Length: 541
Image (cartoon, rainbow, N blue to C red):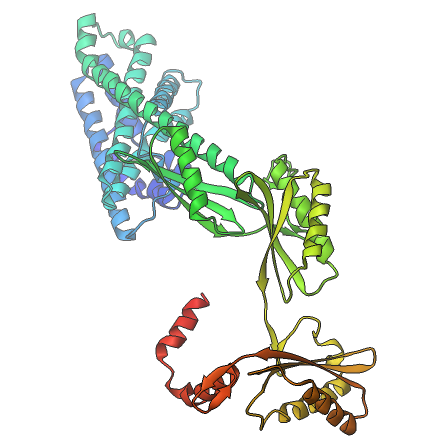
């Protein structure tokens, strides 16, 4: 039978399951189970109680106690040396024992004891069966205590103690039923068995009741978790390329706190979260505080954002057609708009999403570009979307992000995007004419040339001038500029003057806003407040 010195081996084996728990490695934990020496002392205690041998009982109990203390101590030391350990799934799964763990221990105890009784069964069986229920909880208890998680350490040790009692009682019953007491010539009455196995059995019943209560709590928590995931999944299924990740929750006295990770191409609004929070409160029957941790992501194919369900399967496939009508309608609307804009380089579709607005069915299309869609274009797209989806009630709304493109000539207006300006000889000539045009406004204190665009079309050079001043730029001045350029250059030139009235009554007279802005900025560039650059930097985040 085991000796105390042999149990000290547990002190050297203890770090092995601890490493497996910290690394969240099931393989390492299983490897540690195969070499755990605490199984033998438990059988020693069972045999001693069955046979009535006080000396064997003392040696086995002493070996078990020393082994347990050594295992917890070594795990505690290891956890202290490793420092701030991040709790893993392997560790968390052993801090809250329940009735199922007790059932596993009962079956393991029977398998191990029967393997000792029947010589035909391999001796490796008890090592595999018993170590499963003994070693990891002890190592986890030491790790939890090293982190200051006393409740987790108590839970882990409770799991060990429940397994210890289960194995002890089942192994003793197996030895008695196999006739081992009679084999050794021991004669015991029912009173003797009651006196010996009464305390362990009472402890087993009490801990079974406690673990059954724990199992009920776990069941209730899983019911709440299922409700949370079902409700959130149902809500997010109406958003394209959006899916639910991890969900965590815990209960306080008056409410349940929930944090859910959501992978989505857009930020969800507080209004959306409030609506889902109210739905969860109604489903669970308890006030809810919901936090959605939005991780910006998207699933993009050559046709745009994928609207199918992406779920890896065992056969290697991962794309499943969505059965959600809203998602399918969004996909149809996106395809209609994308095809329409395929030949329009001025606009780019970002995404399409449903917009909840009273009882109206609205498709919100987010686009970016250098122009806005005309009303007749929106009407045509709306007609196509209704036809593609079969829903005559759909309304189309565009949210446009206006992009500003600039080059050395200034802001590039829609319709004046480079053109043949990129050809070297044309580019050089345009630049020369641009210099002349800007020079014509240098000494003009009434009007300012704030922007010039140029392109070549139908064999003619076209220049678009943006002019600001206290009144409309005279047509006669445009004709004079046209004549001046015609005398100097052989190429046909057409001028387009966009006159914007900006009036500032200044001490020096009536000037444009562009002039007065340039006047002050030229004199204050070095003395502008430092806070201005900080505000600009923060606004770009």
